[in-house]
Image 1 (cartoon, rainbow, N blue to C red):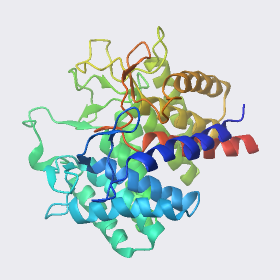
Image 2: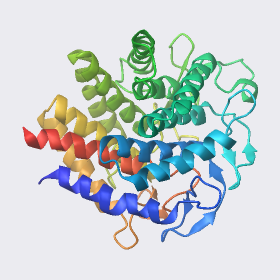
Image 3: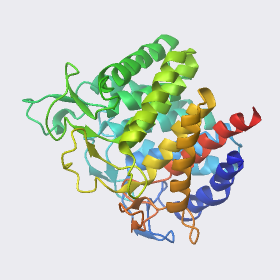
Length: 385
């Protein structure tokens, strides 16, 4: 089967038209992300990281696929909305805004800033507007300044048990490549080295071969809910970032290690009874604290398809091909909505939609189209061979 055409067709003829048709706020700028199964808006609040992800998406497609004026206009609408409304007086990005752009939720979460930096860098390239390069660079420096204490005054823990979280080094490994046009080469290499060391040397546990979500400051494991937490999708997504870095640095060992880790996490995280990948797991098999732990989520499966496609492109093995087919068959038979377009986000353990929304507070125009693009490009190269 020719997969490149499947992904390309889905991206251009299903996924993007859904967001172009239903998400645009022509009055205030930016995007509505709370869309029901048919695309109807059910909440008008705007979540900064989803706004930024959609700016990034349409800017990236304009830069990499086709210079369509409509794509640039969509990106401009979100970029201007964020620039004018989304930052506090210190340049930190609020988590949520009203549809008009008034701040609703304080900038407690550094990931809004990460996605804003990504968005502005891509948009600056698409539009040629240097103001957005400057904001991207300032925001990136702000992220680095906050990386050891990302929540700052909004941190809830008392400091008695200081676990560090996997998400930031993971996201930095991708963010720095996104900003490569506006950072100095030494800045890029410094952050890449930091990220690879953290992801593969600290959060990847040598004994189990699994990525832990939280470890102690010295890298040791902690026997608690948070300390035992495994998020298979997170770990696998990080591995395609590692493969990208391995390709950039021509580091075959890193590509091999990332590929091995993808397989190990899949073997651990696959639901052998109903199929699909669990959302959360406990490293010792205890009941996880997250009540949604056995749900099957869209982004987990899509990021796994990207990771397997990249592994297949750069380090093909029979095991990778077998796993790709298995994940592909489950994902494509459960998540797409043939009636109304786009993909369901949340399935129960048995694989039925537990919610029929197409977008909300956490799901926007990002994981589905990005995965379609990434898999399309990987399979183009695989099939050309």
